[in-house]
Image 1 (cartoon, rainbow, N blue to C red):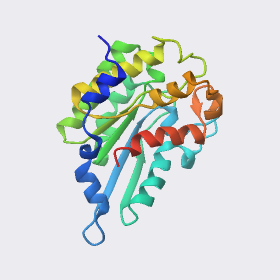
Image 2: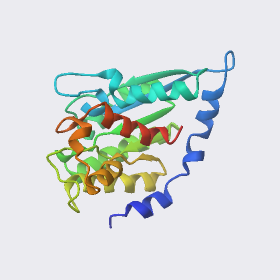
Image 3: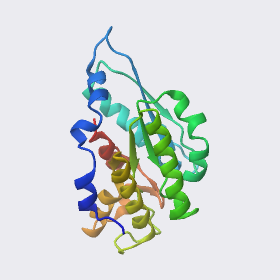
Image 4: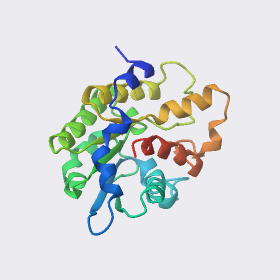
Length: 224
């Protein structure tokens, strides 16, 4: 049975505790500090595609997060490592997870594949996400899962739409494995049901503009 947003959020790890050790490291000053590696693994959205083929790396949420982190932790040395590939689903993302993600010894991994997981479908996507979560967990690496940002071809105000189904599956995985959750879908859904035209947040039908990326970044920054 799919969990509701309310029940999911009630069972997720406390944001104030989930990355407590990492936040402590981010506050350290030279010579007691170390390099922090943040890995973003996913499809074209975290890769920075705006209106294809235009890639605006510095306006995409991984680097907006870096910018915001540096304003909070000015003495921290932070690497943003983007292993995302445009057009990829979680199935192939899981296949290269060890080679392309874990080799960087990440301090946290953000996973964002749901938009493209409509291709392989819920079952295969769920297996792939679960594989990546387990591989990170075996190495003690915290994970933040992201629910999908919009595709203007999908009416996200319609109950049970395909993006909502993937969002619910990701929420369930976050509860099951006690991971972080950046619920991008919930943020955009709230805007849509309130009557906001989501095209204001999009550079094309399935890629956010900087305004949209800032909303996604906010969900991740809640853990920092």
